[in-house]
Length: 212
Image (cartoon, rainbow, N blue to C red; front, side):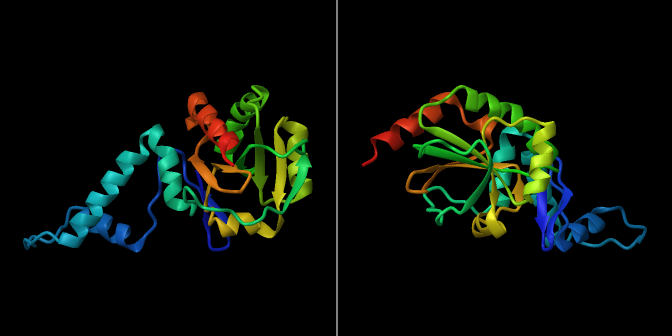
């Protein structure tokens, strides 16, 4: 997983693990180390609470199944949320017709976990789920993306986010990440593509088709 800092995407955070850079975590870790002071001190409740939270969060991140959940902590997408009108610049494989559901996959050419997901998304695209369109969305420039596509083939739609409008409006701060939206741009699913099982996808497609 990669996290974004104030000036853009910064240091990588490996999947299934998160680095805590808060001042509270630093103080908690420093306070938890053995002291050379022989004078006994009562435990600091704040320090203990911080250590406990760090341990619980680390245990959750150690689970692959918790990875998508952890990304939701960093990204500001809510189920039922309606997206603003999309202004995407298609770079490859533009959709031929309006889809019933659209998977928007937030990624970057520099993001190793994103690259590892490309074969899975190619496979999902090739399965040709009726009414589903996959859009790999990046905030990078067209030359960078086209150079990447010359090396690694992507068979689903690839698009650019004009001036990071969607990235910023959804507060996307960690990659990779995916959402499913209806024709009305309503979010009906969020997480990692590998966590979207076929039966759930078919259920969401059926519900979207049946909607008035």
